[in-house]
Length: 144
Image (cartoon, rainbow, N blue to C red):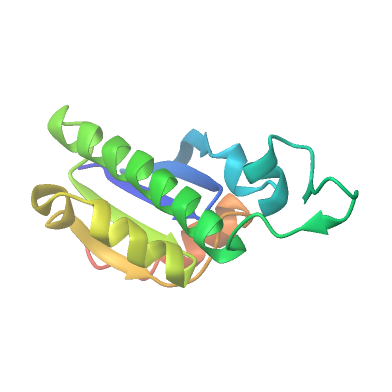
């Protein structure tokens, strides 16, 4: 039995496979746009837009742009999990993600994939060591 463990924030998702008492990192998904400064996202990396007199002006809602990219990445991670499920690579999923991103991920998962989630943690472990991830997420799971 193989459990996929996903630890994620809005810009990076690390995927681990846990089977027979062994945990190993198998994939690393990144969404570079989520790491960019919001002004760079809207202006193609040029920073804030300027008007004819050379003054900077607001080009939109920073939160809305960040949210949009987080939702795109959540869809990408959800599709990854769906593919792992449909290809028989995983029997269950454990997900630990930054609270707001976890909500986006829940929204983007299809019901069959969602049913395979055995544990959710609303904490960002994306930068944690494999030892810490195993201790916090695997050692506390019954039967794993």
